[in-house]
Amino acid sequence: MEIDINCDLGEGSDLTSCERDALIMPFISRCNIACGAHAGTPAIMRRSLENALQNNLIIGAHPGYPDRENFGRKSIKVPLSELLNSIHEQIERLQNLTREAGTKLDHIKLHGALYNDVEANMDLAEEIIALLSREYPSLKIIGLANAAMEAVATKQSRIFYREGFIDRQYLNTGRLAPRSLPGSALSDIDNCLERAVALAKGSSFTSYHGTPLQFSVDTICLHGDNPEAVNIAQRLASYLQLNGLSIHS
Image (cartoon, rainbow, N blue to C red):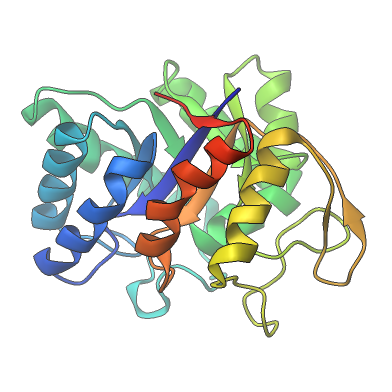
């Protein structure tokens, strides 16, 4: 039984951060590269692409709110047309670099507060899916399992990967617990590994408030900026194997 593992990368402040990202790459299936709005620079994007190609990773775009000050993790009020233009410009920026590198994008995954806002807002999800369908009809979409983005993408017959999180807590509703809640981000390696197996097998795990949750996913995310990301990634493959699982290749 295989499971896809994705990681948000290219989010550091300089090229040194790309070398840390590269330590994660041998242990995942695909990466989502920041496109210069919430994080990333052209140099970081190029190096991230080079490292991803060396590790045979599937490559996707990771656009977010244009808010570097808050790392795209704060909801901001921006006119819809401006937001859609920003998402388009971000994806184009990375897509142009992938062409230069002789490769292509496979998927799109929104970042941070934009990811969360879309998952709770059907109207916003419809607007963004319409943009992606118009401009990038061949690219897959990654989003939270059982939320608005999935519903809209399915309705429009888009290929959608249901995502679960190895290092984040969930509310009883199945949405991600806000980062403002203490302990909402998991860094304990054993807990993260157990969560990965539960998500991959569609078995039960507990929410932030202790309620059992159970659903299936197509891909599991490990955040590249998790302080234990490298250690988690390095132990993940062997732990999955012990539980009858392997990382999609």
